[in-house]
Every structure is written in C-alpha cells, then in structure tokens.
Image (cartoon, rainbow, N blue to C red; front, top):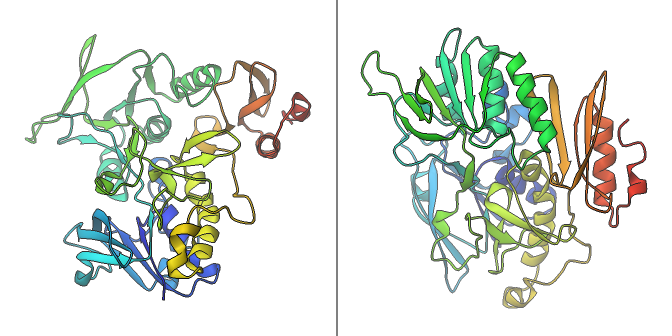
Length: 424
C-alpha cells in the first residue's frame, strides 16, 4: 500500500491531504506539522485578529477525517532517499504538541513526500527580542495583538502586504501607528506605482504615519525590564515605540532539505513543474515552499499567496495519484511523464483588506503602461505591456473586472481586444 507523507500542516498541506482522499487514493496518508496548532487559515491574523481560523471551522477542511495519522508539533529535519523510497527525519517542535505522537519522532518512511512547509519571516540579525514582533503564525498574533490598543505606539517596518494590513488594523484599534518603508512606495514591485501612492494616501487618512524612503538601520529590542521599550534607528535618529512589528517578507522554510538533491532556487523555494513535481522522483512541493513552472509565463512563479496554497494542490494531487498507481519498478521512468490533461495554470491572484475596501490584484503588475480609471465605486488599474496587451489588473470596488481579467489572462494569446469591458 502506497504511503504519502505531507510535511507542513498549513492550508496547502491540508488541501493536499483532503484532495488525495477525494480523488480516491486508498493508501496511507500522514500529515506532519511543526506548529502545535491544528491547521488554520493565516490571512485573518493581520485583518481580523479575533476571527475563527481553524480550517475545520473556517473552510470545512478536516485533515483528521482524511489522514491516517496527524502529527503536530513535529518539525522535519532532513530528507533522504532509501532503497524502499524516501525517509523524512523529524524532531519534536514543542512540548505541547497537539495530537502529537511520540512515535513520530525519529523518521517516517514514505513512497512520496509533499513539501508544504511554507515560509518563515525575515528578521535581520540582532533585531529579535522583547517587544519586537513578526506576524506569521497564530502564536505571533497571540503575542502582538493583545498589546495593540488605544495610545500604543506601534512602529511597522516594511510596506508590503503584511505591513500595510497590520498597520490598518492597528490604527483601527486606536494605536499610534508609524509605517516605515525603505523604498519610495508601498507594495513596491507588487502593484503599479500609482496604486502604491493611492494606498499611502488612504493609510494616512486612516491615521497611519507613512514614511517612505526610510530605511531602518537596526531595531534594538526592549531590555526586558519594566519601562524599557524598543528603539528603531533611522537616518533621522532613534524612533521610540512601545511595540515594533517587523514585516520584511518571508523566505521558503526549506532549509531541512539541504543535502537532499532536491533542487531549490536562490531563496530556497523548491523548483517544481506545472503539476508540482520536483526533478527528484516522489518529491513534490506546493504553496510558499514551491516555485511552480508556469507554461503561460514561461518561468517559475513563487507561491507566496493564499490563492496559490488553495489552488495549486488541485494540479498536484492528480499527478501524484496517477504516479502512485503505476507499478513500483516503473515509477522512476514514469515520474516526469506529462499527464493526459495539461496542468492547470492559474493566474497569480492576491487580495488584501486595506483602507477603502478590498484591493485585488491579478496577473503580472510590472507592465509598461497602466490604464487608470476611477469612479464612485473605486478604481481599476489595467497593466499593459509594450504592445498594449493586458498582463495584469489591480482593482478596488470592481470584483467583476477582476473576474473578467482572470479569464482573459488565462487564455493563451490575450490581445488588446480582450480588454473590452474590463473596467465594469
């Protein structure tokens, strides 16, 4: 009986587990997660700190109903190939492992391993310490949001999605929020410059002090004694805060694959094909831990967003089930064979709750031209390449425009005529 080990109990890993069973896979499924928490949904951590995030409640995803074994509080430490298949070594991730099983410590043997270990926040050396936070896990949220309230001085370092969302939420809770961004605009390289400027104005209206082109030299944590507060050192001098949130992005959490011959890119993401298969037979990756080949884009695209974690398992699971259905001796040769149906190639999509409403972005957002249209509902910013072809769209208050753009961008050979009616 074939055995699939899914390493990582976030949305991507949980989706792989439940989709495997829905696809009729009758073999053994084991799910391992480094956090002691049951699988949960991350986006509300920055927007709705009190929301129910357990995937069973939030999305109806129950890994216990699909997996044969669920080991939480167990972190992967290595991957080796054996004569029988693959072996993942494990170590206890915490003393309070929820639903953990001490027998899981050591190693797990499997026919296939799905890498769904997500990403880890970037924190420069020396910055970590009392009153300095990241906002990536449920535990992080439990430490940060209780100290964010009326009058609290909050400094957010980083003007990406997490920084902007957290600054918005903190200001709404009555905190005095300063957001520092090293580049000259918010959401740099994520949305067109005009959208970043629009967002800076909306944050200012919401009470956030936005300081652009303000690199941070160092964050000095609090001393851990009563009355001590962290300091943020910028060119203009030290900036005092009650709490500091470091929101400088994330890196794939794949260091445990070192020495395994599983190919990774320069930031650590596992390089996979359109179905999620690495070049190593039996090793697949999905979500933030993967860089997936996009036939449409002609390059590997990073995970990095909730929509990728939700949708990419839909391509991975059929490929994995089909491969495990071949005789064991034939599997190495069958690993890289294309499936009868081409892999789904969803257009990159992200959404964010920000001042003014929900900002949505789809496709590539670094085109040569932006067609900016504003009306009483919000705006659309259509991104065009040098030939006038649609490559991406940002919108607020126009969900139908986003839906039309997603369909147009998914079709090969999108032409300028496909823009008709996009702003509606």
